[in-house]
Every structure is written in structure tokens, then in C-alpha cells.
Image 1 (cartoon, rainbow, N blue to C red):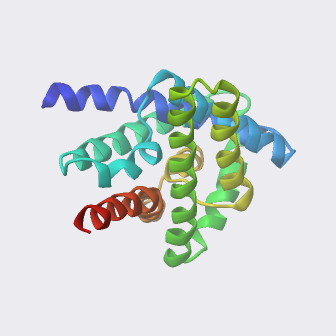
Image 2 (image 1 turned 45 degrees about the vertical axis):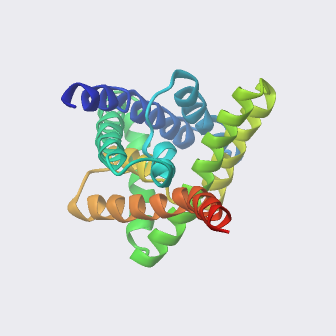
Image 3 (image 1 turned 30 degrees about the horizontal axis):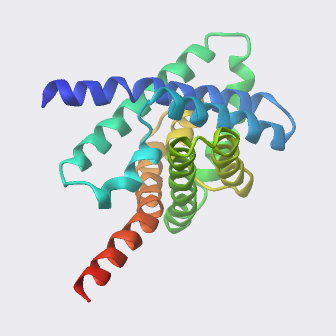
Length: 215
């Protein structure tokens, strides 16, 4: 059990680090469309390497046994460690000041919103992340390589350009700013919203199969 969870954790840390890199490039370019496009490198690489990302895994809770929830929580912790490491390292560089200032402005805006808004914006993002990961799985199964790229990139761009809340990306912004208790509460609430959004499509699928089997 311990070895399994350690494996889950150490596949989650690099996923968080890659999301951090996505956050860095998103804050480093002036064009928001280019920033959103380049951010998607993180998720695309995570999928290709088989790393563990919270928003990519939480949606599969309805299709797994209850023990899977512990895996998801460990993944969340590992992702936070990865984003924290990427934020710490970038702040040691000449680019760190600009990244810090932009991340601070982002977190100030997000923390000024309401918890209900955090949940709803997290819900939309969670649904999009499930769609991105499931798209990649189905395209890989059918050898649709180009479709896999678009199926991964487009949901990421949509969530960024729409201003939806991604708990792991926001972890990076929080660490690149300065972590606070309010920031951690915000991350927890957004993670809840991401979970609801990520699970809605598979939960409907499970319910549909149950109804069909009973009739």
C-alpha cells in the first residue's frame, strides 16, 4: 500500500512541475491566446508521459473503487509539491520578479471573488480537464494522433481564456506570489469544484448504464 502510494506521489510531483512551467510561460507572454496555447504543453506532456494530475484523475472516481479517492488525494499533494518547486526555482532567477508581480495580481483578483464563484468556475474547468484527458485516451486507442493534440490543447485554451479556475495551476500562482491560509482555502474550494466538474460526465455514464441494466 505504501509503495503504491509513493509511486502515485512521485508520478504527481513532475505533473505539478509541468503545470508550473505552463504557468510560467502563460505569465511571460503578452498575448493571452499564445499564453493559453503554450500552457497546454504541460497537460499534453503529462498525458504522454503518464504522470498523475489531480484534475486529470479526479473525474474517474465514479468508475473506480472508493480506495481510488486516496490515490487522488495523494496526487493533489504531489501536484502541490511540484508547483511549489517550480515557483521556488523561478523566483531565484531574473524572471522571478515579473512572474511574482503577475502571479500576485492574479491571486488578488481570485481571492476577491466569492466561494460560490470559485466552485462554479472550478466546475467548468474540471469538466474541460476530464474532456481533455478522455479525448487523449480515445484518440490514442484509435491512433488519431492529430486529434489527440487538438483534443488536449483546445480544452486547456478554453479554460484559460474563459477565466475558469484550475486548482493546480492556481497552486503555482499562489506559490509564485506568497502562500497564505486564505490561498490554501481557495485552492481547497477550487479543487472541490474541479472534482464536481470532472465527475459529472462519467457519473452520468455510470447512472445511464445502471438504469439500462435495471430495465
